[in-house]
Structure formats: structure tokens, C-alpha cells
Length: 160
Image (cartoon, rainbow, N blue to C red; front, side):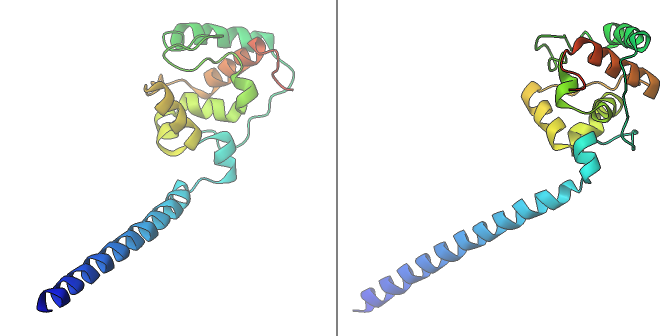
């Protein structure tokens, strides 16, 4: 009888501990999920346009062939060791990037790659997929804008 009571108390303690532990883990998981959403702390502008030096949406109009030619030159000299148009390479295929991202997002990614991959969910996905941090090539705003124009010139769906 003494053993039965001891055994029952032991089992009750184990069950009680197991239930409270899983409940604690479950509630802890819910708190972590909620805090990760809150911790991103991105504004709707940042979600759409990225995080970086470009704080206002870049407006693009009619394609500027001269600016696109300048962008092609910059892209070929600084970016082609990691990016190709029309194929995946070290980094993602950029041929139709202007169909997927805003000009402002592209410029922020070019000018602030580390900040983007640390804070922006889409940039983090790219880092996870390609497992290579984009290099900061110290590209200036006007150069980044020229690269965007080049991307627009090679994307048949740009601006649609």
C-alpha cells in the first residue's frame, strides 16, 4: 500500500511536470512568434522599398537609354562576378528584377546590402537561398539609379 501511494504521487508529479513544461514551451513559442513579427519593426515603406539611404520612393518614367548604357557599364564592371542576366550564378538572376522589386528596393539593396540582409525579410530569404552575402561595392546613388535603368532596359516586362 505504501508503495502504491508513493508510486501514484511520483506518477502524478511526472504528469504534472510534463504538462506544465509543454504548456510553458507552447506559450513561450507563441511569445517568440509574436515578438519576431514585432521585432522586424519595418514600416510599410521599408517592406516595399527596402532599408537604406533611399528614404523616398524613386520615380522612374520613360526609359533613358543613356542612363541605361551607363548602368550597363557599371553593372559589367562591378556586378558580373556574382550576377548574370538570365541565369542564376553566385547571386540571383537579375534579368527581371524590376518586375519583382521596386526601383527604390533595388537601389537600397545595392547601396546597403548588409543592412538589408540583416533586417529585411525578403533580403534574408535571398541570403538563405544563395548563402552568400552581397558585397558592399560603395556604389553611389546616381550609379545605383543607372543600374536600375539598365535592369529596366533588359526587362521586357518593366513598368507593366
